[in-house]
Length: 177
Image (cartoon, rainbow, N blue to C red; front, top):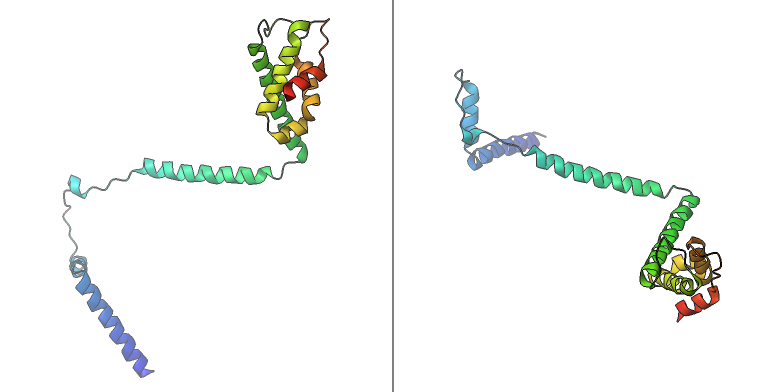
């Protein structure tokens, strides 16, 4: 036990000597502590410390926003399945409306406010259905019921003339080719 105490004392003394050898300013700090100064020193620009707290706050805000987004994403898994169906239905409705708008713009003589006549509506229906089939992912097309059901959904949103009866089979066949 005595050997251990002597070894510990040697290690402590050697550590202090090594620290003083590595950084001689430590001895100067010890001397300053013994005799405190009573006169205030003037500071210069070289002794001022500046802190860019705006950049630090910006970095922390970005990190906190990422954590909040991760938390919200994790909480979304707790939503009921009906919410998922509502979101998919909204996406399906959006792609169908874009298909109708595209078709009206592509067919000569068709306009958004004008009722579609018999000569025009099949072209508009075929163009709208083709747009939806080209731009909607396969899972969304099958969720909407396939080309026949999509054509019916498009017809439900079109402004057709009273005597216009669309031929869904011809529009589906034209869109599939």
